[in-house]
Length: 311
Image (cartoon, rainbow, N blue to C red; front, side, top):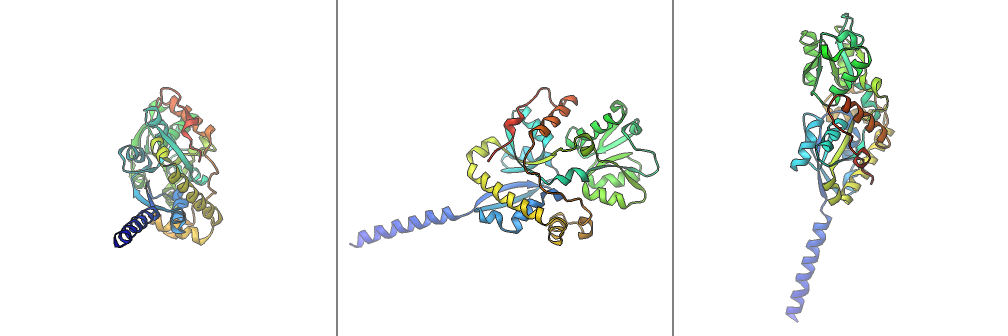
């Protein structure tokens, strides 16, 4: 009798231990950078949407989206914030990644070419013989500013492209170390207030009006081994996107973005927030692939359709 009761007690404790482990949230490690386009992710975190799905999300700040994919391969991250050029390059090199979700559309409207005021730089032709700053050569910023220059009369063989970190670009302009810079949102806002600088163009929108430059990505191997976890992540992220859309123009969104970007709320209020894209557009990915082939970043087409994950 005593032995039987002891056995029942042991089995009960084992069952409770298994149940406790089953109730523990699954962890996802995600690479991020401090950009406003990640607001739906932070909204999902702040509002407990990931917790609702039984997920514990760990964020890993990085210097840029191009770093995310090597981190996926090395096992540092499960999901990475990256860009379409890095993803296409990875697939061409045999790294099987898939795009999971798009970001708010406004990001492309806030990325602009900046120049010194009064020096007559209005088109790509005006940049012949000059120096243009990009954050990383042979990646998405570099690709689209080169295409804008080409389309507006510039001769790429006569232009020098120099790698400069986004936070240093405006100072480099003022010190005449460079002649133009392809900058991201907060620095574009700062340039618009600086009497010594002016906004010249918005290459993303001018080259490809519906471009989707940034996405969350993961390896196909990780997705296939964690499909339920990925689908729960996307459900929570979608709720974060719905919150984002509902709060455009409201103090709640400004406060959220100011919190994770460490920017003043007054600067955040000037950002051009637009709704989250409803889906990843295959046609836009194909256009980016065509630009990459023209620039020699790809030797042949990749299967872009297979790159888009469908929950």
